[in-house]
Image 1 (cartoon, rainbow, N blue to C red):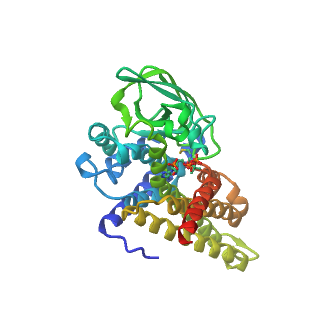
Image 2 (cartoon, rainbow, N blue to C red):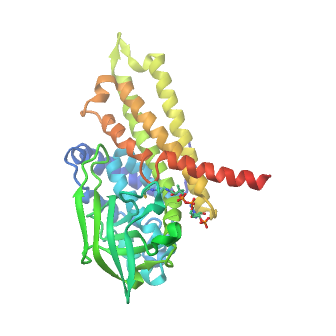
Image 3 (cartoon, rainbow, N blue to C red):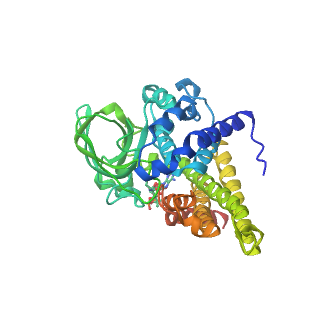
Length: 385
Ligand code: COS
């Protein structure tokens, strides 16, 4: 289907596609096997200005929107979700600064983020917080001109590799969601260290670590927005980023479909290519239809967000939910279409199936997405009365 991309959008999509084909595909199996962080690829992405896509021009960016960004995410995801997770989590960590940072913070951090000189990570999740975003136990106590952070963050994408961390911590534990605040913490700050790198089922090229804060002192000016606004910063960040996870779903599903359709044309059984059997054709037809539906939703929500819509919680949750459920189903079906070969590491689809599972879990489980959509429906229904 033609989504009538403008010239800049086509350039970004083609550039990301070339990097995916030439730089990511040849090494994805090895990165997966070794669980190796894709530094070389990240440098290529940075040199191609892809980390600058949605950063305003006054801070060294290209000044484009989230839609242009998700086109790049989709293409990288077609090749490897581990690589695209690293790229997308960088944008996730940047949103608190982009959306709520002071002019001083934007000037200090965004140019280095746009050039890819410094990677970013977003730190909300903890042992007792994740789906329960207000359940954060890490504290930030104001002492003179510094905040003192104590606590442990869990499962942080880009942990250890990133140099800039946007962290949600409680400045007033008695106020629940309204007692949370957002901060920038730089790597190498005394009192800030990393736990072990997690050994994961999929997206193994990406890095996932614990962040440990032990009397970690940061300047008072590292507070993002106002004290007590941390929950809103986190929610608005996730509202922005969830179309990116949707685009990851579209990309990995497309990658799995392409591999399985090609294989079905080449593999012969009963003297004929397996694609000539209606049972296989129907599976491929469903997969192709679901991918196009997911892409249409993700693109239109992303354009809606860029268009300046104020409250996008419901729509971005819908895009994430639908596209990532499609990704899981399509990658499982791709393995089935390819049969024994689909199960073997010689082909890419078993990795895609392992990788796709995380999309239904991170940046809000798909159960949480349904809660977000449900809450919006309740509000809308009350308004219509
Ligand atoms: N934008 C702006 N404000 C929002 C908001 C949003 N998207 N979502 C909630 N709020 C506001 C609410 O309006 C409420 O404000 P008031 O106290 O003034 O009424 C406040 O924030 C608390 O909201 P609520 O009571 O709905 O909070 P809950 O603790 O029930 O949390 C969900 C709601 C489930 C939506 C939230 O916890 C969530 O999104 N969790 C998943 C987080 C996630 O994605 N984690 C993955 C790890 S981070 S990569």
